[in-house]
Image 1 (cartoon, rainbow, N blue to C red):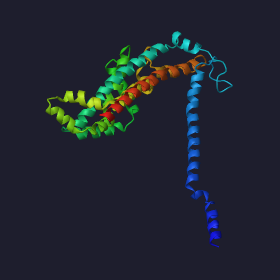
Image 2: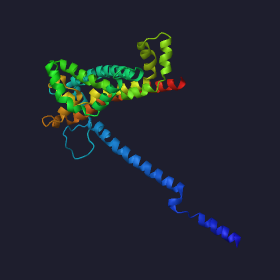
Image 3: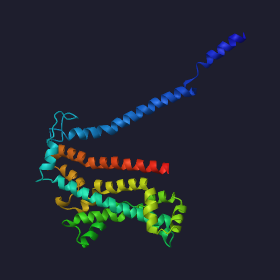
Image 4: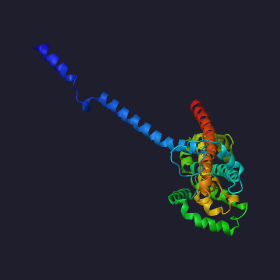
Length: 302
C-alpha cells in the first residue's frame, strides 16, 4: 500500500501545471523575448537597408512598383559629387564638416571648463547659476530661433561666408550650459587628488589639465560625439540662418532634394547623400569607441 502511494505521488508530481513550473515559464519567456528582439531588429534594419539599396537605384523616380530596387548603378554617387550646377552637395558637406569640427572642439572646452568650476570650486552664486542653467535647459532651443536670428542679423552675420561663423557661434555658445553630465562625473573624482596636487605646488590649471582631464576621458568621448552630432544633424537653426545654397549644410541640402522641383531627378541621389552623411558619424563612433575602451581599461588598471 505504501509503495502504491509513493508511486502515485511521484506520478502526480510529474504533471505540474504550466504556471507553476518555473523552468517551462523561463523557456517560454526567453522564446518570446528573443522573438520580440528579432522582430524589432528587423524593423530597425529594414529602413537602413532600403536607403542603402535605394542609393544604387537606377530609377531616380520616387514612386516605384517594388519596395526594393531592381536595377542598380553607381551613377547616383558620381552625379551627387560631380553635378554641382543645381545642388552643390560637396560644398554643403564641407560646410557641415567645417562647422561640426569647430563646434566639437569649442563645446568640449566649454563643457569641461564649466563642469570643473561647478564641481571643484566653491564661490558665491554657484548654486544659483546651476539652478538657472537647469531651468533654462528645460525650455526647447527652438523657442529662441527667431531671437537668435535677429541678433545675428544685427551683427551682420547672416550673409556671405560669415554665416558659417554664425552657425559655429550658435552651436557653441550654449554648450556650456549642458555641463551637468560632465559635472556629475567629476564629482566622483576624490578631492584628495586635487589637494595633493595643490600641496605639490600645482596651479588650478595644472590640476585641470594633468589630473581631471585624463580621468574624464570616457566623458570627453561622450561630449565630443554629442558636440559633433549637434551641428551635423541640425535642421531648424541652419534653416533659419543659412539663406543661400553656398552656406547650406547637408541637412538643408537633403531637404532641398525632396522638393517638388528636384524630387524626380534627385530622389535616388538623396539616398546616396544620406549614406554619405552617415559615414563620418560611423567613423567618429568607431574611433571614439576605441579611445573609450582604452580609457576605461586604463582606469581599471589604475
